[in-house]
Image 1 (cartoon, rainbow, N blue to C red):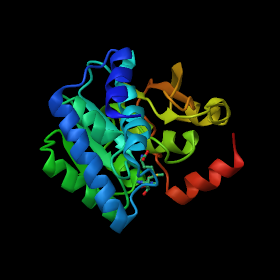
Image 2: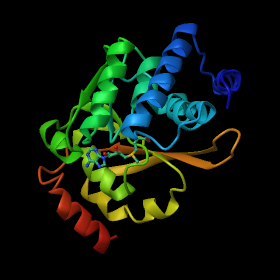
Image 3: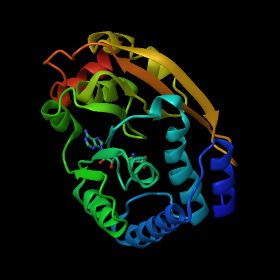
Length: 237
Ligand code: SAM
């Protein structure tokens, strides 16, 4: 996807792109390619792929109704910045908390934050389960892309959401993962409100956004130790 196609595709989902936002994305893309040579931050390295598979894919989240009129978003396992940084470039009135356990990826995101003056971004070099324990019932929205199975993510993110807060992970095929998460959804007093399904432009691969609402305060036992979460994820439904 070249830059013109990127702008056109976003216009189709009612997202306008300013010159400043394009300049910010260009700087981000150049630095990602440059630092990737040294630090191996992402497997997507070609400019057109960065615009499609990183930028468009991240920004799509803004098009859903549930994203609108919110103040805070938690992104777990942001890696080199996705979806959190493109979303922060387009939503200066929201605050983004990007949690990533890998220090070199956090250092890269910190450098991008400073270069682009993203005062609405906080980068947290921690494991998600530790962060969620210390930041309970705090965020309006939570998301994640390409980190782990839904039922594991639920335990890492739901405790950090406010009551009535929404977890909106970016997924590919979602049906099996959702079926496998039924028990976890109940334990975490959460329910599926809606699923958005769409195809990524150009390559047509399947995407979905599951909208999950937290209905009650989370029991203090969650999130458990990561080893326990993983062990249970292999045994139970
Ligand atoms: N979300 C980014 C994307 O879509 O490009 C990065 C995806 S990368 C495949 C998964 C990232 O999640 C890695 O950078 C990894 O360090 C991070 N991660 C995995 N488990 C984590 C945890 N429990 N807490 C914080 N970060 C975690």
